[in-house]
Length: 90
Image (tube, rainbow, N blue to C red):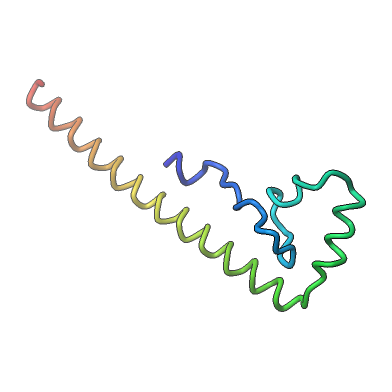
């Protein structure tokens, strides 16, 4: 369950600043002026930006919910084993 809430870091910038939306990329700039220049260069079509964000956020959410489902099943199995051990006096 911890893996589903543990903050994920985006991959570091690959030199392609067209999708400059992650804090991991932004924090590598030395000053606000260099960031501003990169943002002007990265000005993209809003549809492209939204598609990029929707794709990545959907993957993150899908992974998060899969981890939550798995952790709930593991919790139920652990609870059943704990009860079984208690009944058997182990």
